[in-house]
Image (cartoon, rainbow, N blue to C red):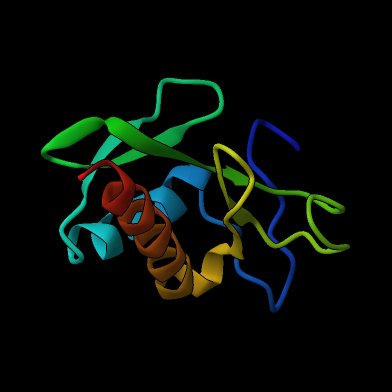
Length: 111
């Protein structure tokens, strides 16, 4: 990286920052009624997702990137705090659906 700028290869767009993926996921989850706290100063940046009535019941989502993270590819992936959700970031609606299902299941057990 020269001068702190990632190289851009012809025919391939530069990968957005990890927080852009988390922002897209936060929008998709908010549409399903979840509260999403953006914790971007944390290392790694993360998204805490919870129901407004059960703040203590939270799933923390990060983005993992680089070859060999989950498969041999450089596509970034969403990863939940317990590793149960692993979805490529371009599939943001699938990730939101899986996170929604997990949190709903947790809520059913405590209600």
